[in-house]
Length: 238
View 1 (tube, helix red, strand yellow):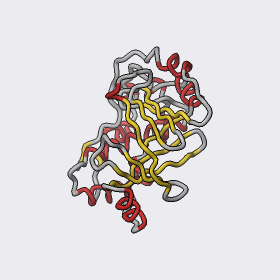
View 2 (cartoon, one colour; view 1 turned 90 degrees about the vertical axis):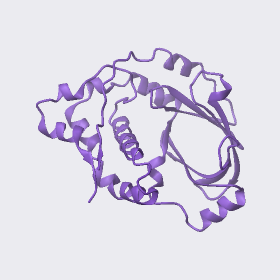
View 3 (spheres, helix red, strand yellow; view 1 turned 30 degrees about the vertical axis):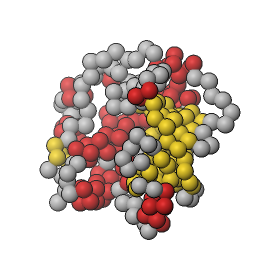
View 4 (cartoon, one colour; view 1 turned 180 degrees about the horizontal axis):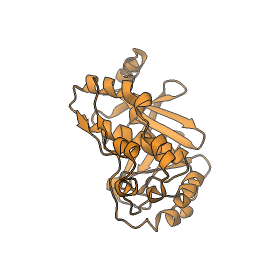
């Protein structure tokens, strides 16, 4: 049984540098630049070239520790590539890269020690059905600019909160399969998968769940039994 509290309370000022840094980015021909938020609400970037992807774990930072290069070794089909990251062990992976309007969804779907090994495993269908849970959402420059102006969790309305918390029908089967495949050893990831789904829904509803604001949903909805049940419910499966 996993106890899952979906919203913690934050006491942080909204980042003042994110939008300014974003505005300074110059996109050149022959590459695409995408942006995502990390767990702390900071912006990351991914620059995609014809033959590689360059990730910066903190937008605006030039620290070598935060920059990694992923080589696009081979296209497997319209959505998957074999990639190589020399900082990883094993260094090779099959990467899913798919666009949905102004969102780019990426996830490593399996790993290996060579292009040949990864391709063989991919062709054998060794991709678990829960792998979409691991996808990271990356946004266009225009989308991030809109998110920077969007309301945060302190302005979250009841109906939108309920919509974002209704994860069971969409995720239960995949979460159960994940727990079975991993033997429950990384059960904490279930919370992260549910949180990512919640954030995705909130973005679709016009919020910025990564915005650094002070909020307390337990206090705001303390008299609402339905909301409180969802905020405190346990993640458990029969």
